[in-house]
Structures are given as structure tokens and as C-alpha cells.
Image (cartoon, rainbow over all chains, first blue to last red; front, side, top):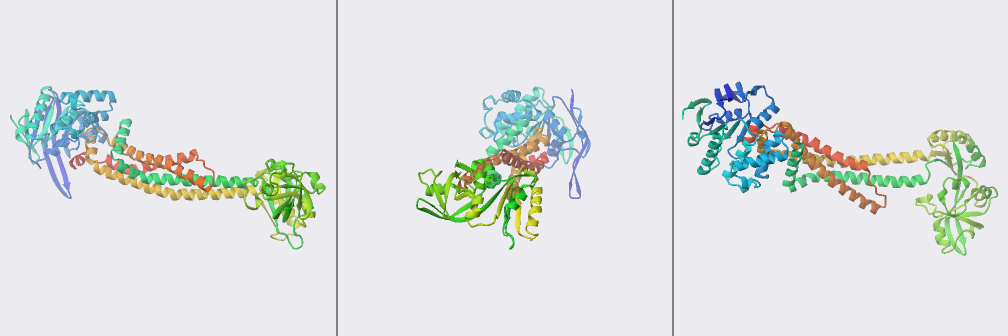
Length: 226
Length: 390
């Protein structure tokens, strides 16, 4: 299988005044196409930092990070934005849909930044919304949708650019157990279709539904067999 | 991409109607006051300079105060000046107040002016009916008169004055023509005047000296040289006494008048520009608030692949939109104010293309200048911090 992501001795430190705070210690991680991985850890374990680095929202202090063969260290801000656009599909805990525009328009957003013309965007966004089961809701505003539906819109938005990795940060955190479970089911389906998914969570029941589970504690990774 | 940014900016303005309107208000007031002030001042300037031009821009006016030995100009002085270069004609004026009588109707204190044929030659529109004073009238000191429109109205109601007899200062004159009604002001108004040949005036009105001379020029651009030459003739004639006479170029007067008016309009525009500046600060303030409100949105857009440039562009467009719309509203409002004022004051109204471009350009510039800093701030937001601020 193709290697999508390769992290080699990644470290990340923050400075609180003069004091150095190391959040990630020599993280090594390899992910292949078609993987479904969950990163499990309590708050303060460094999992958000790891997600930011994987998502190219942040850069490591030390180490080497290859994403789809790109060395992230070499990229400037504009190139990083392009990598985020093409390679990563973000799903956030609180959905992060823009409230004043329709579901369809929300899903179109990443395609606007890819520079796709409007008719193509509408077509792709419509198809992917149909795929997540919201064919009849495309013109609804986010506040006219339930939490689970909003998260599906967010997943559609993450998938619309055909990214190498779907990166979900606590995707069930703002949902009740049943809807949360349905969202994970959707992930499982998408994974069976060959998509690479990384899911960050503090809920071990959710985490266990991935094919690989990695524990993070105080900035150290340990892979557990499932 | 640009189209999308424009659309997003527009949506955001529409979604915050009240706030957008209040923000624009500063620009509206600024632009409206600039447009109104400039238009009103320009209208007043052109009205006044039209009136001044009516007095003639192509002449040098000589006024004589005189000395005890020589109280005014005589025929010899006029002959000497007419020998100079660049002179098209000389029109002396002898002025006196006098009573006039027609058919037992009396007007007191009417300005009676002695003029020559040159006065009528330089401006064909002076005469309303009848004929002008000619050389023969001057040479034979004919007792003929041309009367102003107010005198026609008062003494000749319903009668054609041409050919009638008019008594001026006890002497009978024949009316040969009437003057066109003029919009000139004060003593220069032709409406209340009676004009007779100046040679007749020198004899019949009891005035011995010519105190005022209009020297008409061939080439106005040489006016300053001609003024010097005239001084070369008159200064010796007055025996080098100071303050015996003045000679000034009407063109200069019009020019200095217009430069005063343009300085005034600049000054007023400057004051109005201050309110535009304040409006710009209002826009900057609103943009900064909007960015803080939309921190998460900016972070999300960045996470979805928006580059810093695109974020910056979107916010600058939004700020330009706000100020341009404000500018357009201000333009309409300012033009309206200027239109109403020009009717009230009684001056001409015309709005120049340059003024419109000035307003639009100014407001776009305000948008760019005051939108740049907030937009840059937005583009530099760290997406992680931005997303976390939820």
C-alpha cells in the first residue's frame, strides 16, 4: 500500500515565557492509503497539537514530516494552504459550518479555494451531499439541520476535494451517542470505499471502531493492537 | 476567485445591514459635503466671474484722482495713449448725476455718462434698439442719448422711446437708442443709465475733466506691457506726482478673483476631507470588529485552503464596497444639496465629471487605505488560534 503520511521524530515545543514546554516527543507515525486510524488520548495529551501538525495548520519544531511525498518543512504559507486544500479534509467537533450560507454553498467552499468554476463546484458538492444522505437538504441553512446532519455536511465538505486524508477532530464530541455512532458508521463506510481516515478522540468506544488505535499520552505515541 | 471574494464580501455587508449603513454614514457625510461645497463654490465662482467678464476682460481701466494742477485727462492725453501699440480703441467715461424729464415725468439722480463710439463697438450686445453713438455725434457734439431699460420702463411705458425728446439737465436730447438690460451690479449696471456723446457731456454737463478711461487691447496677453507704456505716457503728464491715477488690467483682476475662489474651494474641500478621514476611521473600526467576530470563520477558511492573500483580498474588497457605496450615496446627496442651495442662492448649478471622479476616487481610496490594516491583520491570523477561539 502507498504511504500517505510519514512522521519521523517529530517534536513540538511551545514557549511559555522563558520556559520551554515540549508537547510532542519524537513522534513516529506511518499511515498508508486506506488506513482507518484513531488517535486516543485525554485532554492535554498533545493530540490536538498532533492533529494540527498532521493537518498542516502548524509546523513541527523538529523532525521530518512527509505528506503525500511533500516535505512539509519546505513549504511556505501559501503552499501550506494549497496542501490543506488538496490533501486534507478537516472535520471539526463543532462542525464549523458558515451559518448564513446553504449546505451546498458550505460544501463548495474548499472548491472555491481550489479555483474550480461555479457549475462544476455545484455539481461536485451536490453529488457528495447525496453520498452522505442529504440529497433533499442541500439548500437548507445549517441552523435548519440537526446536529448529525450538520456533521454530515461538514464531512461532505471535507470529502469534496478528494483529499488524501480525512482528518476528524472529536467528530462525535458535540453529538449524542446515537448520532455519534451513525457518524462513525459513515466513516467506516467511507473507509471501506478506500478512504484514509484519521480520527482524534478521547472516547475509547469510538476509537475502538477504527482499524488502528494509537494512544497518545504526554506527547508519546503507542500503538495498540485491536 | 475574485468574483467569489466580491460575492462573499457583498453577502457580509448585506447580512449586517444596519451596521454597514452606520459605518457608511461617515463616508456619506464626508463625500456629500465635499461634493456640495465644491459644486456650490464652483457655481458661485462661475456666476461671479461671468459678471466680471461682462465688464470686459480685454481692457485696461484708468482711473484719475488728479493733482491740483491737472484734475483729469484731456483730449491730448487720449490722443497720446491711442498712439501706443496694442491698442484697439479708447473709451472715456464722464459721469454725472442729473435729473431727466420726459412728458412731465421726472427722474432725479440718474447717472448720465459721456461715452464715445468705441464703447459701443467693443460690445455689439450693448444696444437693444435704435443706433449707437457714432463719430459724427462726437465731432458735432450732437445732443443725442441712449437710455437704459429701467428708464424706458419708468418714463416710456407703452411708448417707443426712439426718436422722442428727453430733457437732461435742462437741455433737450433726442433719444436714438436703448441699452440692453444687463445683469451687471452696482454702478456698472446699464439699466439705470443714460449715455450721451462724451464731447457733448464735456460741454453740456459742466464736467471739465475725463476721470475714467477704458483702453481696449488687441492682444490681452500683452496687457502688462501696455500698462507700463500707458504709465510712460501718463506719469510725465501728471508731472511725476504719485497717486494721480491708477491703471489696471481687468484680466489680472479676473485672474486674481478666480485664484481666490479656487483657494477657497480647496480650503472648504480640505475641511470636508477631515470628515472623510473620520469616516475612514469608522470603516477601519468596523472592519476590526468584524474580524474579531469572524475569527473562527477566517480560521476555517484557512483550514479549507484559503491563502493569506485571498483572506486579505476579501476584507479589502469589503472595505472598498462599504466606502464606495457610501461615496455614491454621498455623491447623490451632495449633488442634491448643491442643487437646492444653488436655486436658493440664485447661482448656476453644474456638477463636473471631475467632481464625480474625485468623490468616487476619494471613497475608494479611503476603503483601500483604511481596509488594508484590518485585512492584513485578518490574513495573518493563525488558523489554529482562530479555530480554537470558538
